Image (cartoon, rainbow, N blue to C red; front, top):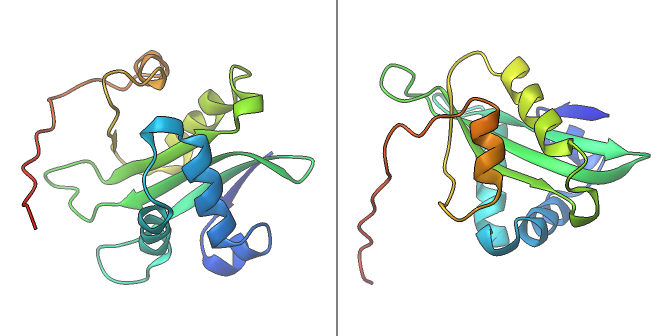
Length: 147
């Protein structure tokens, strides 16, 4: 079963935000971010501020979390996609069973506009994203300021 989560109280009825951040941190494997960064993306999704927002999708099997997605609205629909698929992770024991595809198809059904995601070239999930219709428009480049 896939549940749409629109606010913190809906999330907390299933799992704490901290537990979800640790779940994503663990199951994103080497492509993970710090739990604090994951938590910020969830806070952003639940924000009521203008230009912010989003939602979560949780895949549950007999009340066990087996997959999760964090979607953020960009607030920039005129020049980049309206939505950013920030995180998607499937529990290691459930991979290869179509859970990731189901979650992404649910994202397609629930987003009301274009969706972007960032994926590293060596991420095995890249093939899944391409198979489901994501296309590489351009390479992202970053300059990081030294502190």
